[in-house]
Image 1 (cartoon, rainbow, N blue to C red):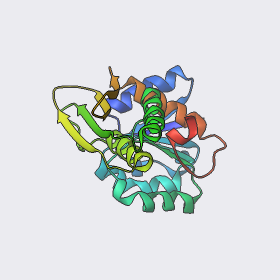
Image 2: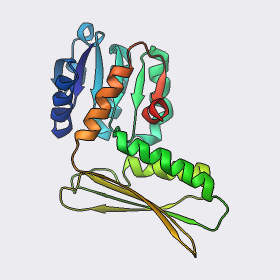
Image 3: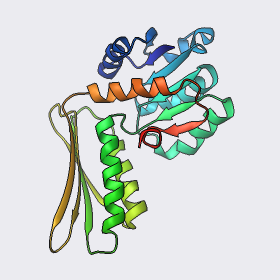
Length: 220
């Protein structure tokens, strides 16, 4: 397996480190993925951590030219159906996630189960997410995913509060509060390392994979 990193910022460098740890060859890291030779791209999995605007401009090229794709960029929920359809049409396997952290995906599982148990028992859900001041989207993709999980299993759309301060990698808290008690689930990232690790695990999963999959559906 070979990989090409789309977006060579802080996350791109962290992904590069994790690829080395997993023994996966990095063929190229590029800020301009559409400049990659299609012959090389076809041999590689594209790991994309760019910006919402960049991904919107690049996803058709990635689907048409790469052997597989792992998409960690968020902020494209409004075109999710079109993106999935493009990868399906091209026959290019894709794994995407609002958050590739293994810990966050454990949070998804805990919140999903808890929402099922508490439904109809007088609880009110609430989500708070805190990130660094450079993050472009608010609420975060992870908070939106948590909100969708709660609404699906609980039947109520939770309020989401977004906080932007300092260089916080990411904190997500889901709370269920009633008149008699409170349940609270929090995931705090200490760095971006967990995201990079999960993305490389996903890249390994693309071997022999068909179709488009959300990461949490493959590991929960």
